[in-house]
Length: 94
Image (cartoon, rainbow, N blue to C red):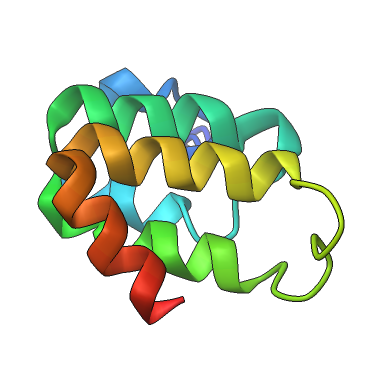
């Protein structure tokens, strides 16, 4: 029997291809969301913007009085990908 292939969440973000990488973002847990958002920004991966928005939406309403770490990570990634204009555009959709 062949060994099971590693799950994308078990592989460092920098080692994932763009498509696989993007699919891991929306369901990222607290331990992974910062690394994923930072990697999306490092790659300037515009295709990851919708996935980062979904990550923010998962916690909509929960961070009304303080920033949630997952939302902060996603917003930081959005800003790194496209600069202030992409960040403002994404924030308007959220």
